[in-house]
Length: 198
Image (tube, rainbow, N blue to C red; front, side):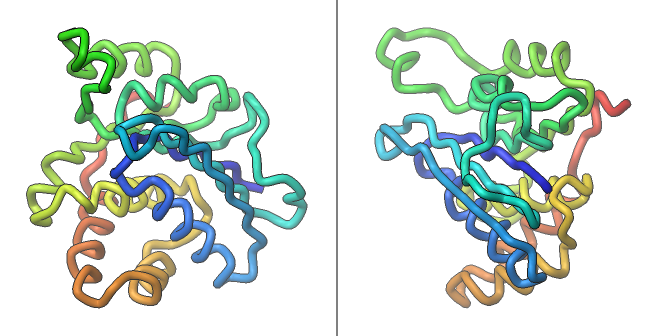
């Protein structure tokens, strides 16, 4: 069984990414269950998706300390979900911080570096992704989700291949968005920094 947490903020495509993972697994005949906690997502709030893949999946929610991988669309959101990560689990995180609404209202400085340093101190298998650079290369900030999927697949964290994900993207996304998302998928697979791999 593979347990994956995807953590981001509203508008980053977290839920779509979880659906792409689940569909790719189901295309291989693997059972998949998903659940989301969305809350204030439309206002830039936290979005957490649970994805469970395997034969004996009975509940869509991942217990604490049971996630094989956390895909963090933003450093603070990855830190917020660390209690789900199992010992020696993997964290894949975009380096670019998104200032939360609370920090904006209180004029608090937040650039994500402190959160990245915390992840480096706590996670034995950490992979950072320059999501901002990849999105700029692909011409859209909306492809961070597929870039992070590429990084996760490249790290063998999801038990699926890039080619299988490519087929799902072609099946599920509007044709005008396919090329850009495939570029992000493969760029994300190549553009990772393995910081704490033991």
